[in-house]
Image (tube, rainbow, N blue to C red):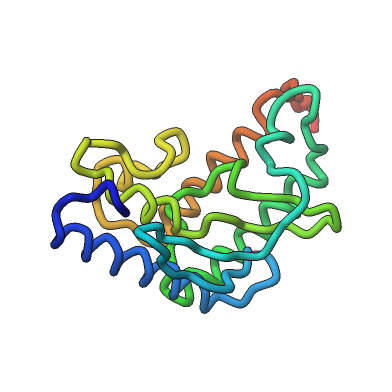
Length: 176
């Protein structure tokens, strides 16, 4: 927060950051990381959240670590259910990607960095930085239009493609 010189802009960024942290903190879902607190200490905005131990899907999206299809589908279905819950509560993630989805050591799927990536980057918009990860963004998000839950679902489709893309294609026999 100390990198923002304009007092009006600083107040706007703080307001949006804490509003986003508060709305995400109200989400109580077993597959969404839990937010415990958010605050400010000496111009440093912070969010205290659940400590997770495990591996993100980024690790499982490349050879030789590809997950079997019978594991990929339930994981992404769980993420879709968590996103549906968030969307019903008015929260859009805006940065769904393999690095923001974790499989904990206890085999629980957790969606992380829920909406926080955009808020943390918002102070840098004056330098024309694209907010989010372009590879996974919906066309509406890339175009800078208002996004809703459908944008997250579009991003989840890209994640599915990434988790499946390095597999050999199987040709269906035309006699079946």
